[in-house]
Image (tube, rainbow, N blue to C red):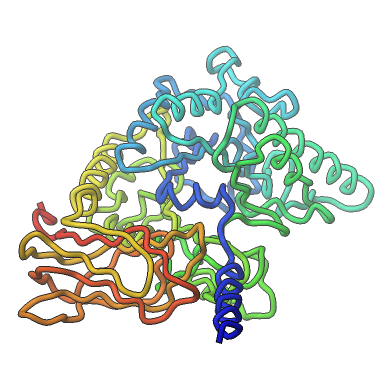
Length: 461
């Protein structure tokens, strides 16, 4: 009998330790829950609508159009923090190839312009503002396209030895720029190579060792070998449900044998049996309403700011499904975030706090059942469940019950929980207690939070 018990204990322990778990930097990603990315580049100042296709191939004629006379990165970060963002990312360089810092290796940068007599450093201003307001700074490095140098999808245009030498030079340039950004501005939360940094064994620069050396605690996103999180499959600001933080292979964007449709579905949902921790990112621009989808400021675009109701839906379908939400913000040619955007971000942050900031009651614990007793009969319409993901995603199916009329009645059910699950009840219910029942799990469930909320009051004000 003792041998059977010991064998069972060994099997249980093995099951627990076989679950993938997040690295410390990935835990910071989950805890942040929401961040912003500021897109800023030369074409913000040309008075024209942004065209990605044209911007990738047509250099800007006069880089001295860069002249944000009222630049205030403090205003940017205050607005982001008011919405609830815990980190912020700046496009240090984008598709034009123009660098927003004092680069010693890329002459196409702020040293070349008349603004601030060629001494401006927007990256330094941005990072300083982040630190001033307690927001973690990150940098976006766009190297896949460079319209000035004729780089298209990492490839130097041209043929023969001329193109080959330019390709090698561009790889070294990218590595030196990344070294500057990793060594001049203190600890960074995230370095984001949009479109990736390609394959260092092919055309791409070898940037991962640079980040590992100088920013060992920084999130890396991404090259062909490593992605510390995954794109959620769309720019809608939402992910699918269920959404698991585990994935079947370590690099999320490099499709394996599945079709494109199946790969996008995998990005949106993850894989509960995946052996790698690659959590989801949901991204969307704030100016995405009325048929628009603007990552950069454009003239006459005030009506494109999402209404509050849409933003709350995105929050619940991203953060509320265990993903991290990144919202694109668009500073204008004066160097300010537009007043309409600032007001909406503040409104959004207030509504998130109103609905989810003060639970009616909460508890925590481990095991298959967790009961939350209330001091009196209380009306609630949703709950928040969080796992201790440092020990892996263990819950595979759950239901929530309310004690009403002398019996337990199911009010919602689901599958994935992960860092956070915001679950709406079928209808508001007045109850004396609520109960979380884990119907299926891998290893003992570790519930960090089980709370109930009443969100309806004042939601339409």
